[in-house]
Length: 181
Image (cartoon, rainbow, N blue to C red; front, side, top):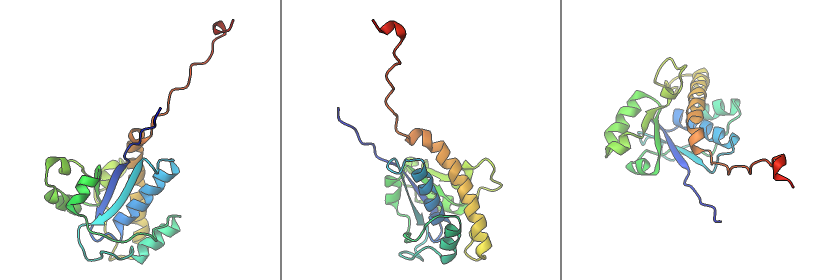
């Protein structure tokens, strides 16, 4: 019997410059997948709607907030979302409604637009559909934004997990006393 490989479910998180919110979401979501033992079954990345920070590391305040919560965002490098991201992603997660509008404008087909969702829409406790941009705020706002992203990413992961968890082969039936001579 040959094992079949299944392509991982791919998620891209999108914010404005790809140095604050979307890198946080990517790092958090990846850790949820790792902790669930599903690293090979789900993949994530992040991108920005703008090109201002392409190639740069995440904002230092983002890295500091992540580190305070036990995450490592050091490997992140900013990039801009492209139309190829629609083809390579199963889910395109916008961090606020402005990103959602931009992405829907970039969608070339209904199938692309159907992949777009707001991160906060997955969190039933969310008070807003938008994750605020902490860029012009202090470190405390980065911590608040990270807490919002953790809650919504956890809810998103819980929703996706049953579909991405590989099915396990059924166990052989237990032997019954009548099965023995």
